[in-house]
Image 1 (cartoon, rainbow, N blue to C red):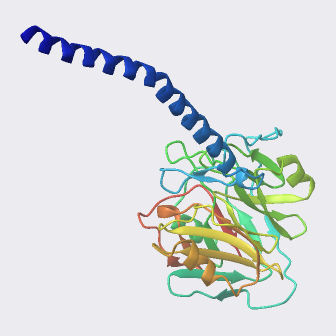
Image 2: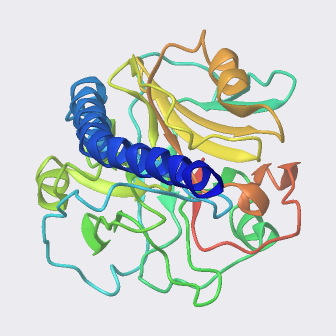
Length: 305
């Protein structure tokens, strides 16, 4: 009896193992089918990247920096190291107004310049860095603001840069230079991004360029927020339908929405993001309007008088 009782559990256990072995291939098959189904669903439902979204700058973890996708091909163009002494360009506005008008609102400093002569201080790949006081001492009767980005270690200006109608820094897939505000020889102005070859910009009469980040408004069209304007201080340059030039600085925490609300009634045609953070600074007639957070020297200023 004792031996018989011991044999029964052994037979039952063997039967159970056999049944499990038979079920195992079925379980594996079901799992495979589920994985295949999930993969197909992901491919079908995955958002498709459009040509326009592929060109949007991507926010990085580096302060004040955005980078365009590395897939963007940069058209080569001949560059010079030095464009010579910076010259003035006469901007032609369609209507006559006061030379400089303060249109500032809380949190956003806005100055409009009517029919100004414009000077870009950076004229070489390594133009050196200067304090705002150095520049307004040289041009005491002018509206002045920081503009293009630069390497703080080497002082080399970066991004798309032209002066005196000559290219000294082409577009690049780096943390700087995916957009630029260009003033032409005939006094008109345009906003460009890195999809427009440098040679084309020059052929269209480009004389000076100022750039750092992305374009917020292009040809009177408001572009989608790409994340380049965050909680930090930002500088901008733009023009309106009458070709008045606007220099703008948004203060800490204003962000994209606050900035766009502040310029909503200005009828802007183009608006380009410039260097920001501690680089942001503005002066008028030798008086500081917006001081750098850390008294920072910068490599490129725009001077309007």
